[in-house]
Length: 389
Image 1 (cartoon, rainbow, N blue to C red):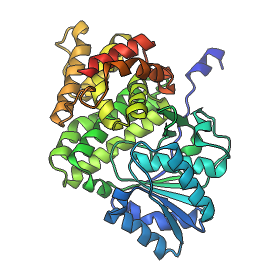
Image 2: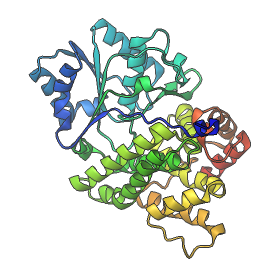
Image 3: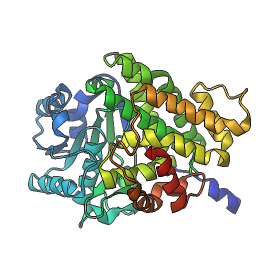
């Protein structure tokens, strides 16, 4: 083997996936198979009020497994919420965690699992491969089509002291089993459908142009872009159509497999900074920023972006090479505005005086390391400024 070929090695990590209608109802059986004696269910108040959550409790009761519930989770889960959940798990002597919900409950559950297997504060484990010991088994049931936390090796936690989001990237936070049930997305609001769908698109875009991409992640990313382009607006317009919901759940899954293994880029670095400092919705931030970053990155990897453009149905053959980046950005903007995401950062509460600090923290985000074009704090501040008005 040539030494240089080692640079092309890639690994691909994925949980066991059970996909289809009714998958959520299998959680009790899988918990028993994993040797559970007492389960901690991690969710949020909104999800707890749904019939999807009730099905989880029924499944556990049918298998005779006792359980405790931790539902004190807010959007953009906080480090102190992780600590509270871990404390409950220890007090209740839980040896398996089931998370049901969107990205916030699932990321919080990952953090709880880390603290169950390791000492200290969840913020101690920021970075790549910083979690030394595994926690209890994790079974995840996503109820949104966007975060992909059910299949990824990322956990994003908010540090309320520094007002930033930290990324924990480790195979230790990959769920053991993902029970992916499209029916659970039927209760998503139009706004949540739009935000999470654009998050899916952003995951796929950033994974495809990532410096850590591979042929395997490319296949997943392109598939996610094609599905999102074809079905996101349809799911937004017809929220009760299970066919469209299933297609978007598949898109989310494929995008998750892509970015979990290829990592992300500048959009997510900037969105994490906004979420940590301003507590803004993650998917909405990504939606606002994606077209700006595409313009910034395009000339570095034009062939890659041209393939993404084709997956979004954009015929670039008759567009001059120098205009293709702008054309793709406008195409993304058309989808975004068609989904009702029209706010500027200023309308979300961001001020000009915030931009320098936001850029500083985005520059420190690990997602930036795989962006195809290097970006310094000045570049990042300029991109925030473009999205401000």
